[in-house]
Image (cartoon, rainbow, N blue to C red; front, side, top):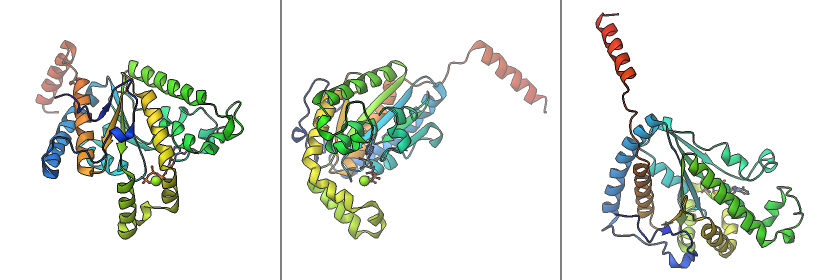
Length: 293
Ligand code: ATP
Ligand code: MG
């Protein structure tokens, strides 16, 4: 079975979020059916990762972008629950520091790219620099960019340039052995409100909500436009976007797990082949151990 066509954003296609239903649940009979599929994928992921790490040839970068409360954190927690922590690193990108603002927008994330054999997870990413900074251009001014001293100085070509810089960057890392998987967790405005209310009612979730989160809802339409433009321009053959319906967490997690397993399989991880030299070394080790010391 190929990737669900309801989820992948084919390169060249113009994204209109209203064409993608956040409540879509695919072909699963019910929640239980989807959870079983995810449990199987978590086991497969563990076995694939073991070989991936041993092979030390490719790296896998998985990045998540979404509106608040879409479920980035919980997806990472559930879907990656079977992987060996030794072969996996998670980075969450918040407001940039003064040092980060004094570099180009790809600098801070580039330092966190996974090395060969590793799975790297970006919870938010360099895409924030064509999303939140687009909705709030005053953030962009903090970057001290040449020729940009006021919000009105930012021409459309500025964003087009950043999209091609991102595409070139992703092409470069892909050609050098890092597969880039990009997930947009697509939650509806209505479901976000429900989840915010739940964060108020449930004492264990109180820490997750701030007034700023709720104020950001006023910019929903502008975020949608920014996402539509950015994802349309950066869904490429090397690194297409997956638009994951996020109103049902069980479906979202299962879809993400499925795509990660398929991608790892495509990378054909395998334990390194035993060379004649290694085989002779194993023989020597065995004889030495047999001598009892
Ligand atoms: P949660 O889902 O738990 O709320 P979060 O990822 O939203 O997690 P927060 O600390 O609430 O974490 O918010 C991080 C904030 O940092 C987001 O509002 C995001 O837009 C912002 N941010 C990330 N990267 C940049 C950037 N390059 N420039 C400006 N703001 C950024
Ligand atoms: Mg937040």
